[in-house]
Image (cartoon, rainbow, N blue to C red; front, side, top):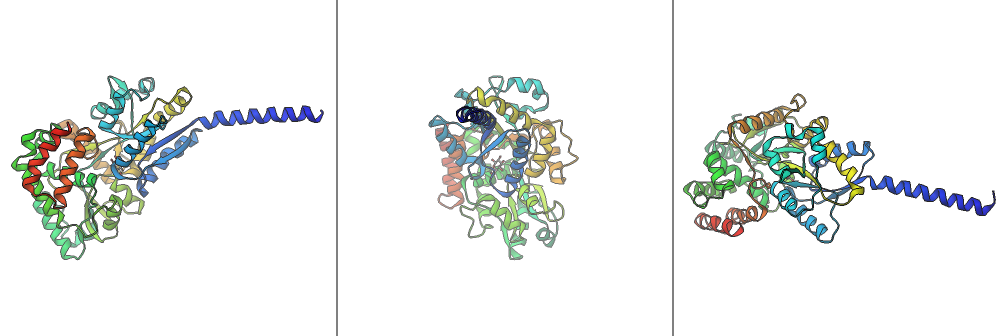
Length: 418
Ligand code: BGC
């Protein structure tokens, strides 16, 4: 073989190798998400590793910021520049918005093959389907009306879990006497909103939550019940530490884990941080429904939507969606994340006590009509209304407006955002 023939053959072989490499590299997903805390990243790794085992490469696009506010801004920028990511973590009404724009891939064939209709609860299908088509694969069900307590601090305070707002205030007083921060809160609009919706549910009950938050009824939004909610928010504010402003939720969880604070009101993603710190429910921490909300569940569900980014990406997208709905994955992921499965046919055996309670509460609340979408996490109202509520709640919590002003502004802000 002369050198020219050899060079030609070598070049050809190299070309084939490059092309094969390129084809292999295409079998991948770029995933935009906001799972950047320790517990969240650990859960995400479960998915990443499952896909990598199947030969699907993972290009990470993390955008930090609880509840996905910043992630959604980053997504809009990517779509505007004509380059949407292949898969995106998304919540409730945002899914509907993008579906309406006709930019999401259709998952009907996969959903039919795997029988999603039978195992994904109706409350989630409401957001996973658009005009009857499957356009999102739900990963989990989270719930926001939880209170996370440091067990040692609770024991020192008498060990009784508070069952209503008065008992909560009494417990927070005891934490204050212990010299710790009674309530670890991070002052960011979405966290203020997460606390507020639990207080709305506690003070008013589920019917009131539905009227005020789901139906955005102006009378409910300016009612005496809502006055009580804002008064309780002002009182809760007195139990925060001086550094609460702007603090990320996971840093507040860390304060409770370290025993520097007694409690945190937060969704059950908080449990992911406790587990990551090697802490055990019932031994190191206690999970209870936010006082006064027992029997009711405010939920949100992380779902992955697949942007319509071309046929060459479709196979990887479908493999990712299929992996997400795999029952074994649902257990492996949700036991780490703090959420519960998005499928109703997954056994609870491998879940800890908080997870078992979460699954039981969810099923019972769904059956009794006591399940409603979380406003702060995109399952009660479109983003514009959610943000209008955040504005009023945050200004009030920070003492920039009075309760009278909040009651006057809340229905106005909601109406002008609708
Ligand atoms: C998401 C969770 C996430 C939390 C904090 C929520 O909106 O549903 O998955 O852990 O925000 O970032």
